[in-house]
Length: 405
Image (cartoon, rainbow, N blue to C red; front, side):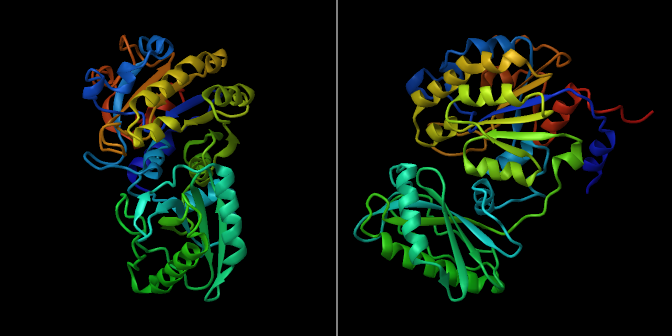
C-alpha cells in the first residue's frame, strides 16, 4: 500500500449517506464535422442532465495517464479508486467472473469473439455481425461437446452476450503471459498466440490448438465461422472496497465484463436489465440496502465503436429521459461520467479526458448551462486522474474526516 492509499483509508468515517456512480460507457467524444462540429453530448437533447449540471460540480478525468488509451478494465478500476497501473485485471478473467464461472487459482481465461472469415481465413468482421446471444449459446454448446481436453488441460467454454464467449484453460503449469490472436482490425488473419515468457510456452500451444480445433468445427457457421482470443488472464489479487473505503457496494449491470470487474472489488451484483429504465428501477428497489451503487450503461460505448453518432445520441437521450426514475429516491451523491472516451470519428476507445458531473448538497455549483465536454472543461473539478474520483465522492458524502490538526 502506498502513502496516498493509506491516507485515504485512514480518513474513512462511515455514515449512512449513499453514493450513486452512473457510468455511461465510452461517454466522452470529440466534435464531429458531419454534425455541426458537436459531440453526442452537445447534440443530444438532455433537459434532465442539463438541470443537474446547473447545480453540480463539473470536470474531466484521465483514466490512466495523459495520452494513454485505456481498456474498459483500467477505466472502471480508476472510477472505483484503484490505480490501474498498480491493479491490473485481465479481460478474460473479468468476463469469466461476470459469467459466474467458478475460477480456480492457476486457471487462465481468455475473452473471445466469434468472427467472420473469408475462404482464406482473413477476418472480414471481428464481431460476426453481433450474432444473437441464442446463436452464440448454440455454437458454444457445440464446441463444449467436442473440445473437453487438450494435452491434459481441461477446456471450459461459456457463452456471453451476442458474439462474445469465454474459454478457461484449467491444468498444471499454465501461465497467462500470452499475446492475443485478435489482429484488432479486419483484413487480416487471426494471429498466432505467442508466449511472452518461457513459462508460457505450453499455454500458448494449448491456445493455438484450441483455435485450430474450434475453427475446424465452426468453419461452415457463417457469419460466426472463426474466433479471436484476447485478454489472457489469471485470477487477480485485489483488496475489496469494503476494506479500503468502508463501503457496502453493489453493481447494477447487464454485461458480463462489468459484473466480473465489480465482483473482484467486492461488489454484490444485480442485473440491470436491457434499458436505462430497467436499471434505474433496480436502483429504486435496492438503494436502501447499499451505500455505493454503481450503475452501468453499455450502449454509448457500443455505438461509439460502430461510429454511429446518431445512435450514441439516442442512448444518451434515453438515459436522460429515464433519469427522473432514479431521482425519485435521490442519492446523497450522484456522479455521472464514463469510464473512457469512445469518439465516433475514431470508432474506438481514445485518450481524451472523460466528462464528469458530481451532484450533492455540498458540491458547490458551477452553474453550467449543460452537461457537455466544453462545460466540463470549465468546471471546478478541473482535469484529474480518475483514481481520485472516489475521494470526491467520499468527501461529498461526508465520509472522510479532516487530515491533520
